Length: 556
Image (cartoon, rainbow, N blue to C red; front, side):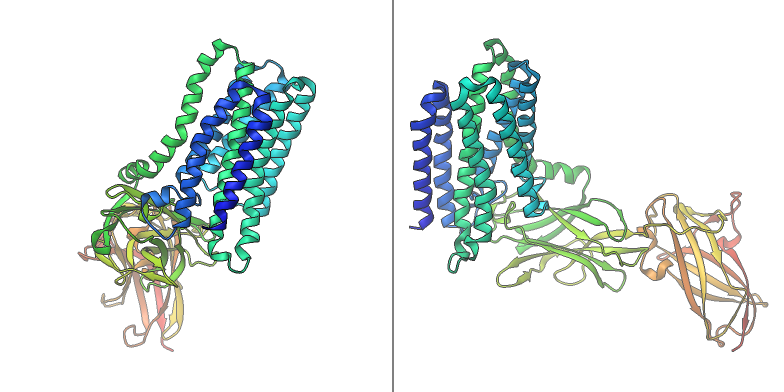
C-alpha cells in the first residue's frame, strides 16, 4: 500500500477528531449535522480519488472523472459547489441578515472572494494558471489575510459571543489556504524532486485536494451557522432560490461546457470540416479562430471541435501551426499537451468536445500575408508521435498535416496611399494608387508599387496582370498574384489597406528599348476572365485594363 494512504488516513482522522471533539459541540447543533453531511460525501470521494490516482495508468471516463489531479473532475465540481454556496450565503447574510455597514461589507467581501474562487476552481478560465506562481500565491494569501483581519475586527466589536464559531471559520480558511497554496507548493517544489518520489509525486495531490475541500467544508459550515443565527425564518424562504441556484450552477456549468456548448458553438460560429483519425474513431469536425485578422506580436486562439466515435484508449494532443503560402514554411506553432484537461480517453462517444490552442505570432512575422492554419494530432510516448489521418475532406500538406483554412496577418500600422484614385473592381477590391518610375534600364531592378483597399471580404482568387504596350500596340505581359502569392486575394479581409511592391527586372530580349504604356488589372485564376473595373466616377474602364502610365526602357 502506498504511503500516501496512511498519511491521508491519519490526517483525516485528526481532522474529524478536532471537528467533532473540539469545535462542533461548541458552535451550534446544526453545525454538526451540516459537516456530517459534507463528510459523508468528502470521505468516499477522497477514497475514490486515491484509488483512481494509485491506478493512474488506466484510462476511461471514470478514471478521469475521479482523478483529483484533473481540472473538471468530480472532486473539483464538488469543491466548486461548496465555494459557490459559501458565496451565496455571504450574499444572503449581507442582504437580509445584518444592517450594520461594517458587517455588510465583510459579508460582501467574503461573497466576492468566494465567487472568484469558485470560478477559478471550475478551471474553465484558467485564472491562476496564467499567473506567475509567486504572484498568485501572494495575491491569494493577501486576500485571505484581509478577510481574517476584517473578520477579527468584526468579531472583537460585535461577534465575541460567537468566538468558537469565528475560530472555526478561521481554522477552515487556514486549512483551505494551507492546502491550496502551501501544500501544493511543497509538492511541486520539494516532493516531486525527492529521489524516487518524482514519478509518483502526483499521488500527494490527493492530500492537497482532499484537505482543500475539507477546509472549504469547514468554512461553509461556519458561514451556514452564521446565516442560521442571523437570518429570520421569513428571510430563509427568499434565500432558498439563491442557494439552490448557487448549488446547481457549478454542475450545470461544467456539464454544459463540456458536453453541450461545443456542439452549439460549432453549429453557430464554427467552420465545419471532416477529418478522421484512428480508423474513424477520432474525428476533427470543425474549428473557429478567435479572430480572422491578426497582427505581428498578437496571440490567436484556435478552437478545435472533435468527436470520438468509439471509446479511446489513448490521450491525444493537438498541434496548430501557421505556415507561409505557398512554400509552407513554419512561422509559429503550438503543440499542446492536455494532461490536466478533459482527456480523450474520457470522451463520451458521439459528443463534440472542444480544445483551444493558442499560438503567438512573432513580432517579425512577414506582413501583409496570409498563413495556412495547419492542424495535427499526436500522442506522447518518449517523444511526440504525430498520427496520420485516415481520411480528410480538407486540403493536406502530407499524411499528418491538414489545412483548416488561413488567417490574414496585417501590419500594425496600415500603409497610406498618396492619393485615392478610386478604381473599383468587382468583389470589393479598390486600387487606390500606384507608383511607376519614368525610366529604367534593362537588367536593373526597379520597384512598381500598388496600394489596395478592400470594401468587403474578397471571395475570388485573382491574378494581377501588367502589360507593357509598345509603340506598335504589341503587349509584353507580366502576370502574378498580388503579394507574390503570399497573400492570395481570397484571403483578403474587409477594410484592409496593403501596399504591394513588385521588384522587376526587364530583359532586353522580351522588353526592347523604347517607350511603353503600362496597363494593369485583375483576372480570375480559374477562368482567366478579367475582373470588371470602374473609375472614380463609376465609368467602366476599357478592356478592364487601368492605364498606370508611361515608362521608357533604356538598354544597358
